Image: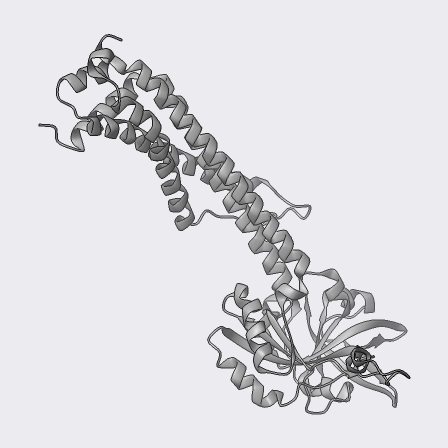
Length: 412
């Protein structure tokens, strides 16, 4: 009496050992396919993570602002219903988010939200001696703002502090103005009624990851910005950071249905980036599918040849009492073994390729372009898929082997 899986496994291994060159070639082929899938997956994941980190490193995941000012035009001489209800935007002025003090704790209580930071932002000039530079002035609560964009981790000189009369500025702006940590500069804002200025001492220089931002960013305490921008007690926007960046769009829509504010997710403000990331993901999926198809066809072709070559042995096994099901399982086991061995070798090769990329591929500054890794869950998933594909590739040859007539097979 045959005992499964011992019988099928032993026969499958024997068939694989006898066709050594074919077995080695197909295992190497599977390993190459798995290595390509694992390496490309890790590379794209690392590239996307690096791109998101740089893009979202200096901005909130969700931004809440006061609604835009709208003006309704005068009715035309001949009334027209559509014209009467039409509205158009007008020049926007700084407006505070209504009841923002009560809104902050409400937003902080949402499960998806990791932090909320009120901000007063506007334009102005940074002056030092004869040098002047147009700036984007931001007033924040440093501790709250740090939870949103990690400002302290971006400090390249000095120590980030925002006591009254202090400011944090971008690295390029400091070079343009000839300012170092400890120096003072004048921040000036203008309005219809006149200009307002304040002298601040620079406590830190930061690198926000984008030179244009570094060239125009000046961060001051919230109260100082409220005074400079003539918005006492106000906040022009609330910045939200989330535990999962990919729920930003859904959360923004949910908040829009609840509050009469202008709410924008990072996906909306970076639509081109999202499109590029989606294109990368689709391209990666296509590459995976093509490589898996090649692996399946390779395994199937080798096993089909094996069925022809082992026809006599199959006939003898059937004549000795092996059932069709047992013959079927012999070739399924071969497919599983080839898929499993190829997966292990492929993952080892992918790890080697990742190590080479991490240690030898450098940017113009001599540093690695970005960090990539092969997570254990991704590796196990790829290995499982390759093994399953090995079994699926063996189905057709196995059915053909099981269908062989013992008498005709022995005469082959």
